[in-house]
Length: 387
Ligand SMILES: Cc1cc2nc3c(=O)[nH]c(=O)nc-3n(C[C@H](O)[C@H](O)[C@H](O)COP(=O)(O)OP(=O)(O)OC[C@H]3O[C@@H](n4cnc5c(N)ncnc54)[C@H](O)[C@@H]3O)c2cc1C
Image (cartoon, rainbow, N blue to C red; front, side):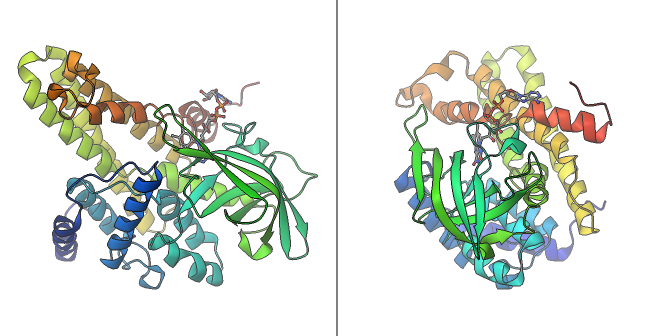
């Protein structure tokens, strides 16, 4: 692994930095879990796309700029350094896009990827069901084949940004005689189809961060299937690999938080208890270690490698690091951590508190950390299955 940047990579970094400095909105956008905030984020995505920075590692014909994955990491570093908005179409650009690139037909690539890159079409992920969370193989939503259509029945839940999305990708049981991982297919479903009902789920803060989606004989063309019929589990595992192992949470996000934590420590060092210094340094080192590990993964992929079960190790690491960083920040803020955002001394506190609350969901989404530990035990360490 060579950690020096080539002149072309340095030039790319400079170009991305210049463009972001000129274009990142000065004021933070509203939350993308609200209709207005979602619209603001979509407008930002359009701008990114027009600037050629929506999804840099994708081929030009699909809305990217044909960069390699190392340049994508560089772009991510610059993106977080510039304090740019979170990516509202992360399900599309980081999860579905790479899956279509691997499993899609030429027609599917041409149909879907450019509209994902431009966020003209916003995507929700439809894995979870009321009785299929950690146990995803218990999926019961069905897709009965009728000629050149599937007829969908059942329910998905916890679809992030589902309340505002245009499409959903999900797993449906296409062979009713099968159980568990077999007989599932990966389908791409427009959310405005007759027979599809999207019901927003209000979070504790009142924002509709999730939706549940009901299917009552909604008809989806067979051409909307990604990968082979009844072999959707294999396709979904590739999506999960991108999610946990590389794209969803790039190291730059955590390096930016670590840097903010160091700044917070400097501002509060006088009042801080001595163990906090060590905790801050440990967080910073862990964020750097995660970055180096990701560079290693990317170098492996550039050499033709694929993401495997080690994605589970990765997911545990970034999600636990995020919780640790925010807990450390709240300890540094001390009693101020409880202030309401409008209080005069609350500058920056709300952001840390919001970040802390969101970090607590990291060990749950993208597959809980308990499940990742099962994967590591069985698939990497070769330990026997329990029960
Ligand atoms: C912020 C956020 C965003 C999300 N976005 C989406 C989305 O866009 N699309 C989507 O489909 N889903 C989404 N989810 C849902 C998420 O995937 C599920 O919450 C998760 O898979 C766990 O399922 P569950 O909630 O049903 O919990 P359960 O599966 O009921 O698990 C409850 C607890 O039991 C533990 N457990 C269960 N089985 C085992 C086992 N075999 N061994 C050890 N421990 C076990 C779990 O680790 C967990 O602690 C999101 C969740 C969150 C928090």
